Image (spheres, rainbow, N blue to C red):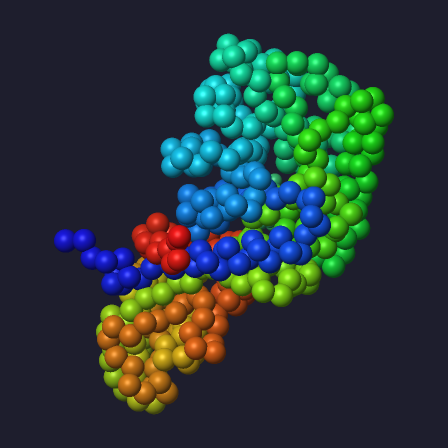
Length: 376
Ligand SMILES: *Cc1c(COP(=O)(O)O)cnc(C)c1O
C-alpha cells in the first residue's frame, strides 16, 4: 500500500511558489542585463534538482551541476536548458557532454584537442567554458599562466568558447580584500584578451556572496545556488527583502510518555529528569540527516519551541513537551521552517553543530521523501 507522502512519519517540504517569488525578487534586485545561472548541484542542495530546475526555466538562462549524473538526470527529465558542468571531465565524460549537449570546462590543450575531436565526429560545435584559478587553487588555469593557455585554447575552432569563469574563495564575509584581489587578476586577464580580440559571451565569477556584495564583479552572468533557495551564505552579506527559505522539514509525533524524577532519556544517559516531565518521541534522527546533538536544539510543536532532551538516535529524538498542553500522537512537528510565529532556520541548526548553512541544507537524506507544494 502506498501511503500518501504527507501521511508519512517525516518529510522535507519544498515550497515552489516561494522559489518563484525568490526568483522574482532577485530579478527586481539585479541589473536588467545581468543573466542568471542557477546552480543545482547536489540535488539543488537537497531540494531536488529536477523540480527546482523546472521552476527556474522562466528565470535563469543557464543551469549548473557538479557531476555528469546530475546533468544527465536533468536531461532525462526533459530539462533542455544550457547546463554547465563544474570541474574537470574525463575523456568518457566528454563524450557524454557532446551526446547530452552539456557545457564542460576545458582548461588545458590536451583536453581541448580530445574534446574537439569528439565534437567534430558528432558534427557539433559544442559550447565550453574556460576556468581561471584566481586564488582558490581548485580548478582552472592559474592566473599567471592564463593568457598563453587561453590564446592556444581558442585556436580549437571546432569548439565554441562561450564562457570564461573564475570562483571566489571568500565573497560573503566583511573582509573583501582577497575577493577584490581575485577580481583584479580576472579583470586583467579579460582586458588583455579583449585587446587581442578574444571575447566571450559569458564572463562570470560571482556566486551568491559575490552577487550580493560585489556588484562590480557581476560581468555577464552570476552563478546563484543558495540565494534562490532562500538561504544566505553568511550572516553579514547583504539582505534582499522578500527572500525566504523554501525548505521545511516536518514529522509527526510517534509517541508521548510521562517520565518521573531521576528517569534518564536516550542513549548514553545524557539527560536526567529534574522533575516529572512529559516528552514526545519524534521518528526522525541523525539517520535522516539531523546533526548529532545532545540536549541542544528545538522543534516547533503547537506553535511553541520544544527543547531536545538527551542525545538523538539514528531514527528518533525526544523533546520535552511538558509546557505544551494537549500535544498528542500524530501532531505535526517542524524541525526546520515556520509554525505560527515561530521559525527554526537553517542557520540555527548549523550553529548547533558548528557547521555552515550549506551543510544543513543538503544533509537531509533520501530517506525523507520530498513533498513539493504549488508545483504548477
Ligand atoms: C557551488 C558553486 C556556486 C554557487 O554558490 P552559492 O554560494 O550557493 O551561490 C557557484 N559557482 C561554483 C563554481 C560553485 O561550485
